[in-house]
Length: 67
Image 1 (cartoon, rainbow, N blue to C red):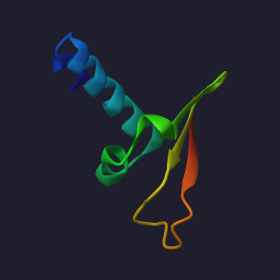
Image 2 (cartoon, one colour):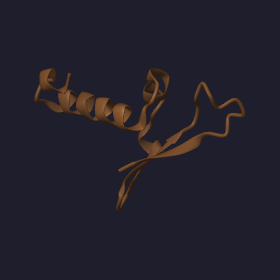
Image 3 (tube, one colour):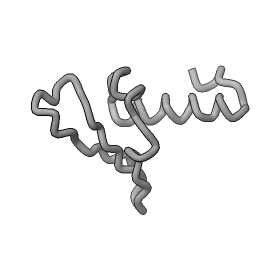
Image 4 (cartoon, rainbow, N blue to C red):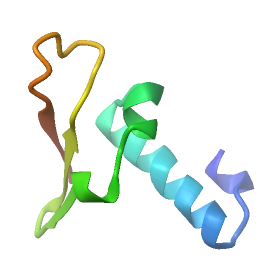
């Protein structure tokens, strides 16, 4: 899929979302609910805060590390 994304700003955004979704094993609903504020850049990679998830019955959210 990445091979066919255009080499422009929207294509780079789409590629980043595909890779983050794959690396974090996110559901579609989790990816579309992401905001810029939910992504934290750390020395080891990224820490993404999932505020809502199908499996989060208490609504506490969880942090997922992406190396």
